[in-house]
Image: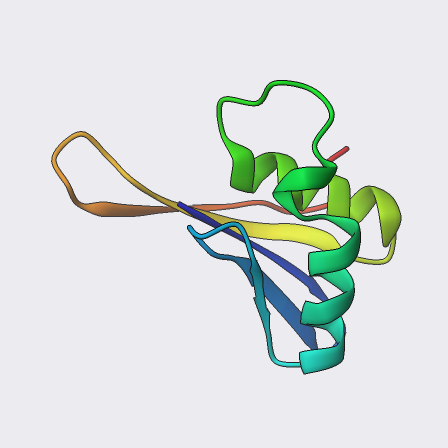
Length: 86
């Protein structure tokens, strides 16, 4: 699964290894520092979603814009979000 967050020209996406990928190396570094798996305080069934929610809590201009996950048939599905999720 991966979760994408966006703000203006900046896009970041969680990776399955618990790190962030971004079109801005500085943003990826910041997100890895403030919203990595080690920063999740509560048990979460979906660590990447928890990372994304933590990221937008720390960077309120960002919003979650999509989520991709493998369904039970092994196919990838995409969920699109609008607005800020808290």
